[in-house]
Image 1: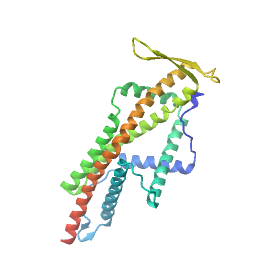
Image 2: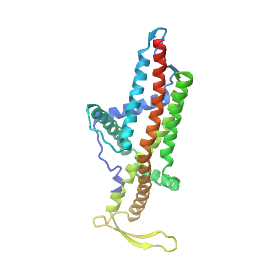
Image 3: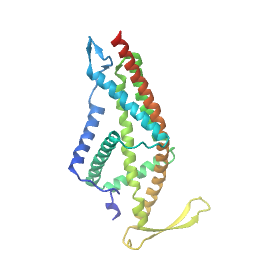
Image 4: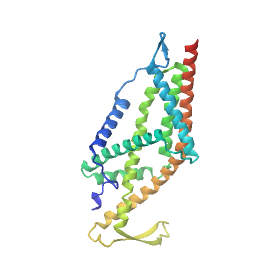
Amino acid sequence: MFKNILTNTLLNKNFYYFLIGISIVFSTIYFRLIRIRLPRELLMLQDNVIKYSIVFMVSVGFAINLYLLILNILTLYSYKPKENRFTHYVNQISETIRRSLFVIYNIIVTHASDSYDKLANLADKFYNYFSTTPETFFPFLKYFVRLLIVLAFLVDVFFFFKLNFFYKALYLLIINILIEILFYILIDFAKNVEDAANALIITPKGVNPDSGLPITNYERAPGYENINLQFYITQYILCNKLTGYLDYYQRYANFFNPRVAIVIHSLYLIGWIYVLYQNLIIYFS
């Protein structure tokens, strides 16, 4: 029974979300790995002709980073603004993207052979490799990638006034995407601790005086007399340890995310303000 539990959330088979999810996956692969972007000038006025595509890009870049800066400042101070039409649509889009990617994830997990065993093996190897690594490692790795990208953006803006290194640095986002996918899988897998605990009677027996480790007795719970006891014990211990690591990971991420985001989006805003300032000087000169 336990091996059939591939995920603890309901599988949404809506074809609409499937199409959106597939589109997101392939567009991400295309724009992040395949498409080669040529250097792009940041001058809005070229040969006495206004380049509206540049105007649009700069305006959107400025507006998005200003919005995200304000949003993260409010998050940092635990202020939840009232939902308006704009935030409602933003939340709706975010939820649609989340559900669409979840459908793709579930389809892959459901149709992969021995998927639970593979996920359990992944979780076990992850914990063995990273259990002694500080829980801040992965959040700070993602922050480092984002900082490199924004620095590439500032170099392009202040030294060359065209986007070139910034586009190349965007490939680094693949690292962050892979980390997000990994932790999404681990968090979903770790929720199986509840199913394993329901099948077991867990009785603490004190602490081993030699090793300092807790001594625990496991028995089959009523209604689970036919289960493989050792398998359930192994999965319970693995999910329990993983849950502890992921809990601290999430706590550090929740603490640092808004603070780092404020720095990142402030740097982007400085760059976009400089672009607007230089273009205004050229336009009125």
